[in-house]
Image (cartoon, rainbow, N blue to C red):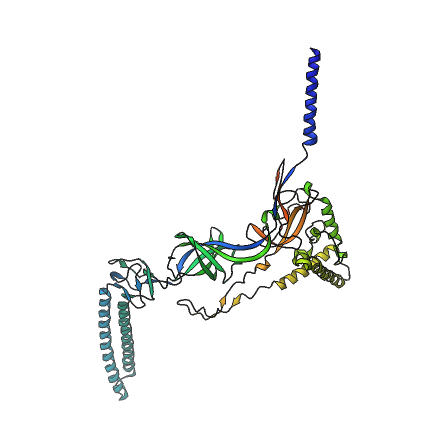
Length: 525
């Protein structure tokens, strides 16, 4: 019995030992599975999306300047009218009586004028003969002048009454189509405080415009002349095209969100579009053809520290620290060609302001172009040191060089003048005499949309190596890269998952300090 108990106890100890081994010695090891993608060559198209309302280019609200009862209507919804055509009639009875009253007042004023004129002539004759006093002569002259002014006033009152009578007949101000009628026969309209609207007439429905609102975060990428496409719910399978014709400066704030009104001109020859339709608009702001592009996930991925090839990182740091003493024959690894992102010694001002060897193309960008830029970089550094008698510290030198590169960059990317004369051949809008230059905001330049990014590749050791690239435009899913280090078909890492956790866009970055923002001009925005 004791022997059997001993055997059971020994087996328990063995099981506990095996469990402890796997728990403490094998459980800490992480096994990673990587998700890969390839550098592709293709097109990138960037759109700004918005919603808007379709309206006629020119529409006029027809009102009335006099009050009264609508006695006749000569136009209805969808009526095609011509300029000067009678479209409504207000009951003129009261207005005709006002004209008769004004005529009677005019006759009275004429009689008073003639009487004062005769008295004035008689008093003047007697005064010249010395038979009347100066006081009576002046009184006769004043009475004559007053009656003369009263006659003019009566005539003006009659003219006003006739004008009001004429306003009782409503005419079409433009050629077009009645798209709205707001009154009926027998309805009383009052024009005491504001002119009531009777009809809305659209000038030409074959030419429409989309009035859309664009968020302030996207308005900087909108320019006059950009192509736009949109759909409407009435024709969900059909795309309509237009062109940006105006960017209005007046901000429209809705719930603390600032928007700007953008006008898109549309050709409506088929008369499918109707006023008031809601348009889902896409404005083409930038496009590239046959460029290298990578998934935005690859640019956001941050490798965990235990996966990074520390040998490669150390080489990059050493190369960064010693690059000022190397020449164009430098043969460092391709991943270290673009320094400036290591935070061990500060940010390279040349890279921070767009002066990177990656901007070259092919062999020239990787070798000859890099040497020329490095020589220019060293020449600038030497000139700054000479200007300060070689007394600058490392930090002061970095600040001075950052200022110099920032000044050069602002000179290269100077925006065009924002005030331009009106474009020839476009004519003026209906009812507006354009005699002043037209203000236009600066145009969007897609080539200025550059930044820096980092991509990870898996080497033969099973470790991750960083590759620094310069980024271009992004469509939200893919980002353009301009780098001679990568080529189409190269395999890159999108993410890594282990038996303990999933690593995608989070993790410890061995090349950056805490709180580093995602790199890259496109996906980092």
